Amino acid sequence: MATRASMDALIQQCEDVIRYAQDQFKESSLQEHYNNDDYTNALQQLEQTYQDIAKMAHSANGQQRDQLHRMRLQIQQLQNNMILEGQTFRGGDLS
Image (cartoon, rainbow, N blue to C red; front, top):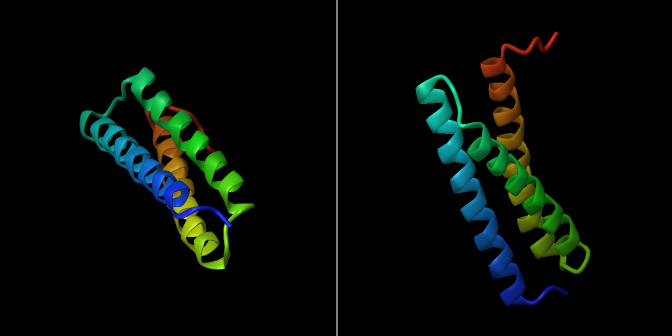
């Protein structure tokens, strides 16, 4: 079972990364362009946090796994939105 302290630290990391990525996403949407370095960094942090969640889930109990799963879904949704938005800004064709 994952310790309470390790779960709390990971949840805090998730919340911080999500907040940072949302800020980058909003900023890019408002300006109709994005800062490539910050935007890419936000996506990389989301991916690293996603991997950290997957590792923690191996030692988590059922309730902790549910909480991690919800965080993972939030991260995936934000990643998807940012990737699609990035495609739009670069003029990428998604078809």
